[in-house]
Amino acid sequence: MNKKVNTVLFVLGATLFNIIVAVLSFIVLIFLFSRFIAPHISEAAQSSSFSLIFLAAIASSFFIYRIVLKSLIEKIDVEKYFDPIFVRKNKKPVSHETIE
Image (cartoon, rainbow, N blue to C red; front, side, top):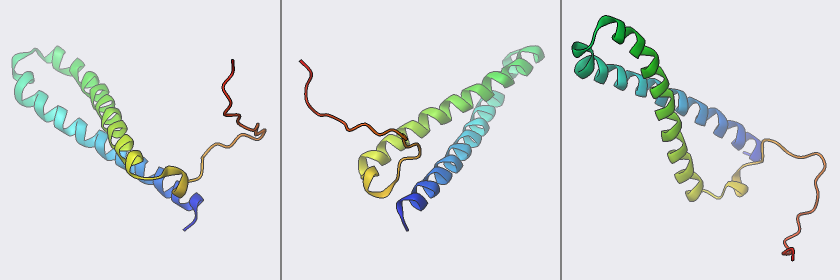
């Protein structure tokens, strides 16, 4: 496989992983909420808590995704296996000289 195919497969796999983590986080948070918190609060508070649980699931999946992605990037040489998704049309040569 070439770099472009690797990049597309990685993006698709990472997206699928993020969705799965979000759904699992939502299920775990709903379970914990219904088991420990819901019996002690009113019906109105329970119904408004659903949106907070949804946002917490999205936030937790984001943080888990970042941790997994960071550890994966440390293990894999990204430039060797993947092409950049966005490429500049006007490439300027990068100078590594220090500016004084």
